[in-house]
Image (cartoon, rainbow, N blue to C red; front, side):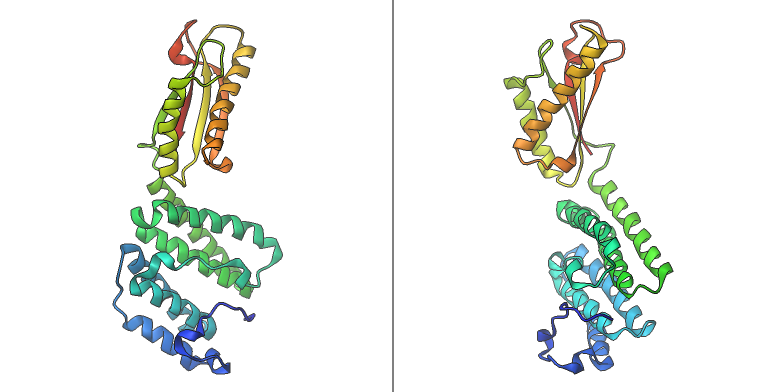
Length: 276
């Protein structure tokens, strides 16, 4: 295993070669097993995940340094500090260069889900996703058990997807309609008022995507209406960006006139906002 600055051995007052000994790893794993998990449902679930992970590392893989490291993360979770126990930092691991973009993107997605209600609304699934991510990294650094790497990776994506389904459910997704004047893509006072409500919902549901669908009535040509619907969606997007809704969360599209729309239909001159 490549040496890394990740094990906080100050907790046991030893900074020496003995840190990597089997006895020390055994001590940390046993200490975690002897603890009664405290705190939130997420803290308890995370402690259980790291208990299983560290035990497997020392019993099945004989990987003492990693067993000790993840046992100590489990101890922090068991002490009720699960919300402060973060997924592994990439700089601490000697990972293949080609895998770094995926790990970086995946970690950002996981951290966003954890912070945006995942730990509260889906504590067990969130704990599993975090543990899967750490196992994926640990296996990827060792580079020799391809099946284990792929298994941890797939488990991570599956559990993270389930977390996202809980915190961003489609069936109860917040929806808003911002209306426009004839032939216009400008936001008037009433439109801005609706947008304030949408922005508050997007801020609260901070992991969810914000889908903007621009529409028009049947006045003018289809080509004009398609362009106008795109400009309306872009107007709403610009306002969201100005209110600190991240660009990567926003999907803005213009679909032209509503099928079967009558001319001069105010209700069809809108941008639909769905936060999911």
